[in-house]
Length: 224
Image 1 (spheres, one colour):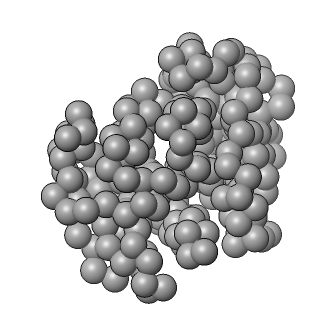
Image 2 (image 1 turned 30 degrees about the vertical axis):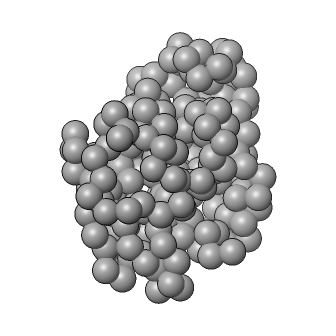
Image 3 (image 1 turned 180 degrees about the vertical axis):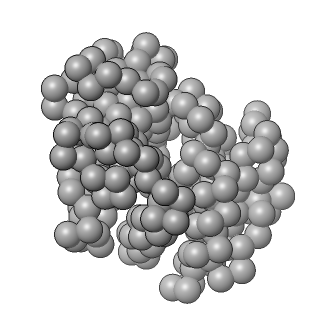
């Protein structure tokens, strides 16, 4: 039995990972025909069910920060998950960053000390699974742009402290990609800019709309 998750129903081999438990419920209602709560232990809400394309899918909250996400991913691997897409939020670091835009993570840079626990040195890049990345690009088309993201141990961060190549900052993507690599799970990530370069925060309604769009794309890449 995994150390953190306590599944009440079988999990799918494909999963969408979100930090916020509320977002896991939102996407379960959006993407699954008859979602069943598969986990509520530790407040990490998870749901499993079938998509309209008749594919099994699990949507699992990972909590806040990289260490929490890495622990949850390890439990999911033990429960049979083999592919995952992170649908999360990030803070834009570029002056032109627009709240609500979708970023397809082409690489994630380690900018926090906890990355060492996943075998990643400071400023080292971790890449997503190339097959999932290509499928997400096809699904999202012009809805998202490919970008480099830096993962920190805490937010907010000063843009001047971020790696020059980073378009945005978050707290989980390096951990999810690196731990997935260690566990043999194919992982990719789509992030919503929830705060732009001018520090303008995204309101709840457009944030939910962007999450649904990213979730639909993530669900679609698992259909093949």
